[in-house]
Every structure is written in C-alpha cells, then in structure tokens.
Length: 229
Image 1: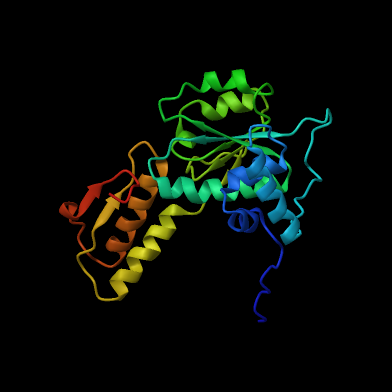
Image 2: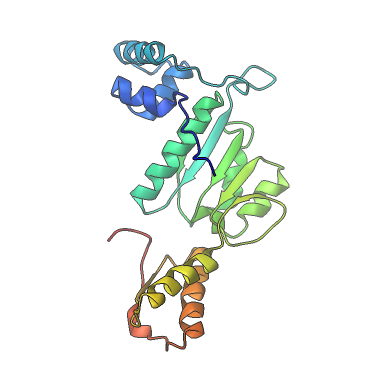
C-alpha cells in the first residue's frame, strides 16, 4: 500500500498561526465581521495573501445571500474536548463560508427553548455530549425539520444525522489489550452519569473481564466527569 500523500492545502489554522491570532479571529476576518480591529484585520489579510489561502466559497451564502450561521452547543466539562471540537468546527465552517456560533448551555437545557432560534439566529446545529443525550432534544429538532448533527450519543435513530463510534467495543478492546499484557487488576473510571456513552464503555470493560474469566472488582471502579482531574 502506498503511503497517503500529505495534503499541502493551506488551512485556516495555518493562517491563524502565521498571523499570531486565533482561528476564530481569522474566521471573523474572512466573514467580514466589523468587530475585528483594523490592525488585526490587516495582519490576518497579509497572512492570507502570503499563504495564498482561499476558503471554499461554494457554500458561503444561502439563497438570500446571507451567511450561514451554524450553532455549536457547548456544555462539556472538558476544556480539551471543546478545544479539539471547536478547532475542527471553526475550520470547516470557514471553509464553507459559514459563521460558527458557540452557545454555552448544559444538560438541564429545556429543548423547547432552542426552537426560538431556528431560522432566526441559527441555520444549523451541532449537538455534542452531554446535550446530545438531553431528553426531548431530538424530537424538538425533528418537529421543526431543522438541520442538525448529533455527536457521540449512543441513542440509535435513523431520523437524525449521527457521528459516533462503537463505544462498547472500543472499551472492550482496550481492556482486552491490557489483559493480554498480563494485567489482572484493571481499574475503570466511568464517565458522567448523564451521558449514554458512559454506560456503553463500562459494558465493554465488563465484557472483556468476563470473557477472560476475571472477577469484576467494584473497588477498582470510580465515577468521573470526563475531566483530567
């Protein structure tokens, strides 16, 4: 198999690094946000010119000529998770000529409150955990036929766009790997109880132990919140 050729396409992240600003700032300059300082705008524009950066404008506007507004709901306690997700979302939004809006919320959100933003403030929605597991959020979005994608939710449905992995199998394989290395006392830190992936991963851990004939020691299991602490 031939090694995959590394892409040489200049990205928004490259421009941000060259200009010494955040990806969000580059996105604002590209989208003609008037709130950007003139000096900052000049620096970013010079970096864009120097790198010959050309965002994909094929999907820049809607039929009425307005820039798309994609909302990313944020309420994950892990700043590292938000960082990776935000960088990817910002880069993709910029390449599509869309505006990314980050809306801070939490798992106690009333899904019906989202509807007031549909079509008025937002044109699409990205729903990561723990919001992707909020009861009733799918029904609210589907009732309004609003474009949305759910991330890392274990709730199977054919009515929504979903991005996920098989969390149970992933945890089973990781635990199995440790067992194959000769380990018998394997601890497990559960995730937040309000996220379905937490139970799915624990099931995978248990399956691997049972398959190996190892008793499950509950003293080795703790509950965490998906944070480094």
